[in-house]
Amino acid sequence: MKKNLLVLIVLNVFSFNGYTQNEKFYVTEKISDKYAYVDVVKTYERIVAKGYKSIVMFKTIGDSYYTNFELDKAAKWYCELFAMTADLEPKYYQQYAKSLKAIGENDKANEILKRLNQKNENRVDNTSLKLQ
Image (cartoon, rainbow, N blue to C red; front, top):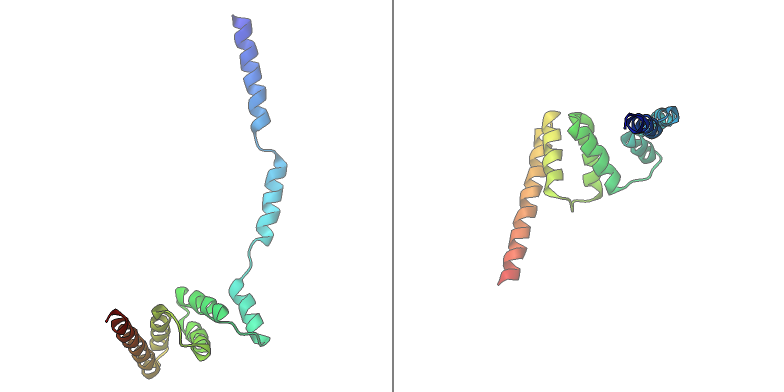
């Protein structure tokens, strides 16, 4: 009985060692961490500087700066976005207006909010026509 117990303990110790992580795992993890980070905003800014423009890129750049409270930069990119299209979700009107107010351009911010109100009124008017 003691012999069987000793054999079981030895087998458990060796089988446990077989399942532990080896050193190579940690080495590859460190290498992949080194190359995992890409600054998308800086990449998009370089692409825009070369002349390529995209609504998705302007949204991404503006949102990134807005969430990081760099409202002067957010206002710049939202301006580019609104120059391309006015068919945007209400959140972009609000974020653009807040960014403009933060940098002291209150008149332009009020104009953007007025455009949002007009857009909402048109949406309500179109909905009521469809319901009748």
